[in-house]
Image 1 (tube, chains in turn blue, purple):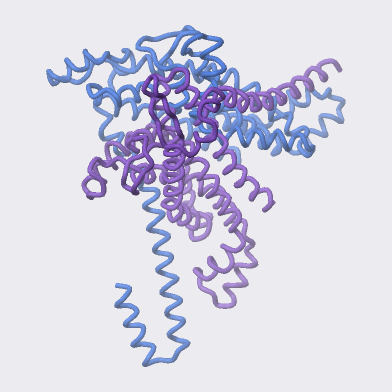
Image 2 (cartoon, each protein chain N blue to C red):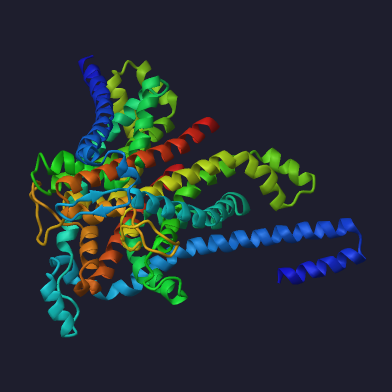
Amino acid sequence: MINQLSILLKKEKASSNVIYFSMNERKIKNSFFRIGIILFSLVTISMVFMIVGTLLYKGYHQINWAFFTQVAPDTFTAMMAKSSGQSIPGGIVNGITGSVYLVLIASLIAIPLGVLIGVFLYENGKKRYAGIIRDIVDILQGVPSIVIGLIVYIWVVVPITKGYSVFAGSVALAIMMLPLIIRSTEESLKMVPETLKEAAIALGTPYYKVILKVLIPSSITGLTTGILLAVSRVLGETAPLMLTTLGNPAINWNVSKPVSAVPLLIWQFYNDPNMVDLIWSSTLFLMAFVLVLNLLSKWIAARQKR
Amino acid sequence: MNSDKILKYSLFSASLLIVLISAAMVFSLIKGSMLSFHEFGWKFLISSQWDPTQGREQYGAMSFIVGTLLTSVLALIIAVPMAFSTSLFVAEYFKNTPLASVVGTLVDLLAGIPSIIYGLWGFYILRPFIVTLGLSPQGFGIFTSALILAIMIVPYATSLSNSTIMMVPNDLKEAAYSLGATRLEVIWNVILPNARSGIAASYILALGRALGETLAVTMLIGNENVIPTSLFGTGNTMASVIANQFGEARGLQLSALIEIGLLLFVITTIINACGKFIIKKMA
């Protein structure tokens, strides 16, 4: 195709004048580039549809009432059901409760701490040490999740809970949430008009009230967006949980005992050839949960902008 | 007045805490890897032997370092055309249209998909496809992992480059158009020179993402503790060897895994710091 074009162009060059030709060549290059950009962009976004499509297509049949109310079956039960041609009994309720529990405790640790540090950075914005703390937060955000798992294993699993536990998993997730919450807190505080703050100070409001009653309420949408994004980010994390909470075949509410989580169950199903059928529905569930949170936070942010 | 002080102190101590946490992280990693460091010294970095058999334990990180760098750099090379195209699509060709915001949101959604889902999709959909193409007998290996990693890091590579491309002053572009430049020439001669540090920084940060990615790679790379011999050969990365062997690791092996964790931490931090440094210089 391109060869033919260039032959055509060469013929044209011989017959017509040079300027006309070079203009044409530039235009052709231009439109080829445009087509290339559009094609590559389509390939990129088609990945979303391919992944979501696969999950929907393979995962929808196992989604039923039992899926949300029963714990994951053991491998023997699954094998029996599979060999008699039935679908695998049971669900992932131990994973769902575990995930919610882990994220809840992680949020209880990360949100207050993150908001405090965010306010601190906003208040001391231009100072040198604030810059250093910002750099540290950036480094923390870049630490691979598996390394965070290792560290929490050393900090919590070995000395404090003496074994895999909910608490260890929550600490790992909290460390991963912190940088996101700190950053979004600082950014949304910066959006609050300076005049609002000055007006409050001029009225003689004590400083802590300015922060608690003026700054934080007026940046609450930004805060919520950041928290939702952070939650959706850690909900799907698997690697750090493998090193900190391991998994549990039953529902557990004891913070010093291991717990399961949806991504951990997926990993377990993946490693067990009898459980293949349950993989896709669990994955679909996780994906839906994460994407809904993700889109919700985007929607809140977009509504705020308007 | 008292509450003011309490608030100020709590703000300060929270911030101090995060500094302490980060320092303690580095300290714990170093302390945990001491046992392995005393045993193998600097040889740990250049040896590619990995033998957990009791009695003749021998650990070296070379094959994992090579595996990690190879998959991540290959992933970046594959991701760049995709990321560059979507950036131009969103920030230049269809700037401020509904189409651009749809494409931008979809690309952002890629960042929201958990690593394990990419791994599963790669295992059940991409891997058979690689086998059908005849690229590798089992479908596992460096190339398959890099392909999945590439999709995963595209959103990280686009987010910053989009904003820098959008920030290129309109006057410059209009001046070029008025001289008769085509869109391609404007992109090549005006937009790229102006936005190149932002684009470079975002690709470096995406590389940092790829280095630490664990499960998707673990499920696809083949987990063989050797230096990969070809692009379609199997290998192992630093993150996946930790994920794979951590469960059974005790004593010296655990320490060796922690040392790998420390190495991974150092490498990603250096890469991320490079990216941030470029961003800072831009501002």
